[in-house]
Image (cartoon, rainbow over all chains, first blue to last red; front, top):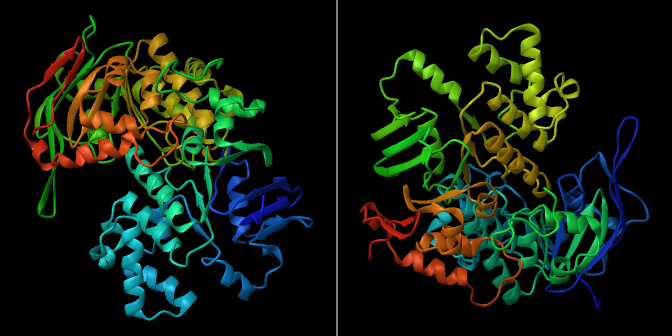
Length: 272
Length: 304
């Protein structure tokens, strides 16, 4: 792969305990190309969110990235950056959409103010300029500019999640990390948001790291997919190959556990 | 639909909420029936009125119109003793297994308490045996699980406890409101199988509320689709999902993640979404005539 946006090599992360350590991520390596939509799938506790947090160094003790691990963002070694460089990296190079949008917006600030926070801190933008930029960003996610003066509780869950996505795009990041961005939303809203991300990625050219345990959804939106099991990346392949020709036993089991809308009620060969 | 008499039925039930100056019709002339040994799925988007229907059944809300029938008798105005029988016959399994169990009590407490309240004659060794039986039924190991606290269990295990707690009072009806939406995909199937087992082995009537239509297909013989407080399409699950007639049913189906249809330029979903937006939500306040479009498959068409 030529000049990947993200390159992870031999990433190992432990949660340090009083007596024993828990290895959450075990020697994981993968790349994400420019403009690529990469999905990371696996069950709760498999380490996928731990990786997402580590990429922008948002992990907190007791999580510890073991030496020998490497995370390169546009060729820069993330693990070697000092605080000032990290601040430059976050939002500008990599932005993150968390699972519960309703909790990641500040309830006592208007939507406009939340945009202003990011834009002023990172670019020193003036209030009127930030307002104009915020309106432009909201338009990207189909929200009218008059909602800028609204508070988060005045918006639906789907709208709040779209606001978070718009804020994440404020500084044109090269990589957008989305950790279960639509799990709390219903299927129609989920679909609207993912179609919007799909179009924005084509227009703006950013890459996406998409984390979910919904394999059917992941195949639908991703170019390539990595399957995680107990901290290890057990299979990486093109999305359609993961769907039509899964190689790892665990990937096959995951498919077998998903009820289907057409044909047999669950995937063939499953033993419920 | 089925030969057996319904155990629980909603007959033309309405519920209106007044919020600020606006009025929300959360249930508009909703009618459906639950039969022993069958699962009825209720699907629809957030805010369509699914949970309001559940709360009306659980008597958390009183209907503004219509009747709730239990074994053919209206519930309204029942004696207190009959209400207690109703509360033990109709049990609920909630969405969030992390907040529906009390963190300061053991699993034994959670399963034992409903038995003490509803079966005061069950005591000592007989009660212990009954506790072990319901836990075994949900495929948990009684001696291992009884002394534990909720935080020591996984989401799937906690949801099994919620089901065991519901089963503890020998119910006839289970209302399951999104019981798997907060669980891992790999754990969901186990919970759905449990619902299927209960229905078949204990002859329970199940109302399965969800926005995940594929899981509805897995557990339910019959399905109804709710939109803006109305049941807009209902009938045999395979018929409704195989030949959806209402624009909202078609939209829901087109939004279900389908690995065979990668996101493209123009999708069936975009088409259905435009379709539904073109029809004014407000105009749904009228109640068009119901049409039967196939045996046991009905729709309430959208007004033009």
